[in-house]
Length: 252
Picture 1 (spheres, one colour):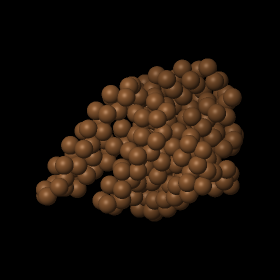
Picture 2 (cartoon, one colour):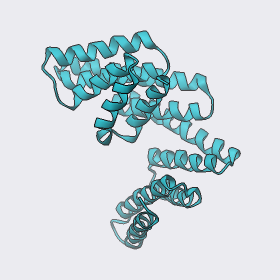
Picture 3 (tube, helix red, strand yellow):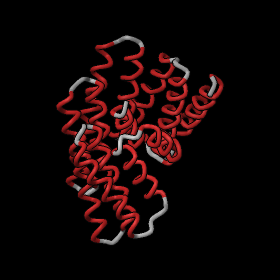
């Protein structure tokens, strides 16, 4: 990743922005521009060019707000906060991180009530991580508990539908959410149950990989956990990666 890579992403974003003007598909191009701006921000952030990263995230935030993409705007807000944190601007960091945390939690509740339990779990876990950054450990714990609860509830639905592989994966994520807040007994029970489902139903796909990772984490095996995580990391969402990283932090 180089400065030229970041500039190429930024140039692509500008191209989408120009196509958004005066077209019927304007919103589609605004969305594409916002996503590309965030990618450019991520690129600059990796290079520790926090000023340029912040500029990209801020523009992405404005675009996502314009098209009412609430969760995407919250993600931008969190990334902006991380930039301010690295720039030593505490007030701006706390304001934006609080906005992200509250939005994630609010949207998580809405998703849960609508029955979108996995989306709810991911949003609650995002909120938990944001609250931890603010040293709000009570909300950190509460949100991870809600994430584990939503994963577990969906796992039970999947078991009734005999979708054992995906049920095992959801139990595994529930286990990791519990482990993240040191609810070790609950985490171990869920991780063991997930692996048992895989064993009984000859599951050896990506759902097994998640179950194996969950078991390694709950067995407090940092070396194996990191090895398994590295193997499947490219297939995980940003939210899922944050859950695993929180678990790995507990293994230090």
